Amino acid sequence: MIIEKYVKVGERGQIAIPKEIRDKEGIEPKHLVRILNIDGEIIIRTQKGKKSHEDRILEILQKSKLGDKDWEEIKKEREER
View (cartoon, helix red, strand yellow):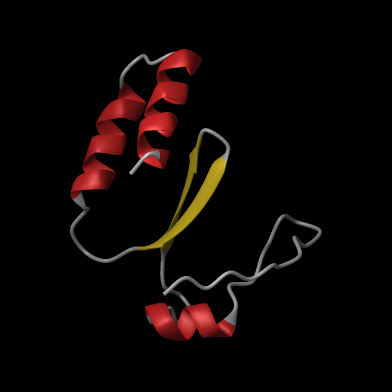
């Protein structure tokens, strides 16, 4: 199920996660969420214990010295899935 909502960015860059999404993901006050910026895409993830395989791979890739062309290729391959 995909839920898409639009939210306004506040004066200090803050956004509110819509209630429907907070309820679905069990996000409560004081919970940590992870924010990733991958080649212009902003991803907000709940922090649930162990890291996923995808998270581990992304961390390794971020530590490597990839150029813009490499990231474009990675993005292209991910979109093809």
